[in-house]
Image (cartoon, rainbow, N blue to C red; front, side, top):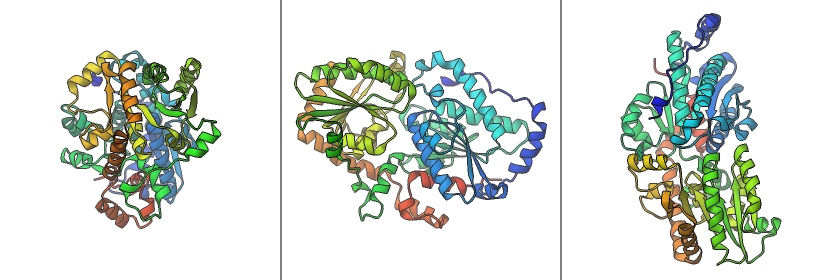
Length: 469
């Protein structure tokens, strides 16, 4: 459906790029050579990288850090990203929020802006002369960017830079999703998969892929490196006492972590529901306190700051971007209420029981019901094929239905333990197999086991990638 919303690819002015074309042929027309060799020849590695979501900003920033650490020559970046990627040296072409829109029908009012930003990004990527182009999630924007870039290079008879897409599209969630993978190989050279079995399915449909593990593992690899524990035993222990002390939280207070999302559209839809739920809960918990985790998105930050003064219970706003602060807050919380997304996995790492909620435009909800082929919306439940985490979706996502779910989770120790036990199974599924890690270590002598984070595995794959002749 989204394909019909965009016009045909834009064409850059051929006449103004004749000199550039000759120069670029000399730089990149070297099929069969590894990326790291091309970078060494030019004295630098040029990476054009694009992320459109807060989660993508985190993934992109870690990949950038790993590339800088692992590449033997200086690494230069251009593209689109957020605050975390900026700290790694990216000067974003425009604020990442300009291409951060969830849903299908929610996209319609932003189509013209999307077209302009896509055109701007295609032109910037072409002029940057990258060795590598990396898009992170946000497949609606990312795939159009990669497709148009490949077409522009082909029109000029040039060899395109290598295209990587980080986070495989959720083909397993939609009817006909697997069939769409076949067409991606025309403009995506390799996909980095973050869930088990994705690599095998991608390859069976002609799309080169590597399972690098889920990005949230970055939160637990370094705290546990050097410890003699298996991945399924890893977890992130926050400092509960320090968090409660610094924020003057009474000893008897019941703290609930609220995670309304990272995109403005979902936050404006979910936060009022969360507020009314807290209003109902305070009747049963006199010392109820909520911690709102605020995504590092300027529009989200502004909205939450403006509406929180009417919050029904004492509230603490927690700025995003600091894993330590986030997990400290999780450790001080009794339960969490979150919008569907990666955060459900982060809560499992913290062993914090939660409820997953989700609402969207009614037409988007209808589309999901019609096209989805899975029974759950949260990744923990999808991975285990079991409703371990209660989900309140669509018309069931109301304060009157969320309130009893939270009360039951707070009071029922067995329900909380069930989620905690399930977390160990989930982490095991998110970690690459020993065979994958062994193969990577053999390929790259610089890697050591503690360094085998998803971002480092992706960086090594990029540097040693050889584009077929």
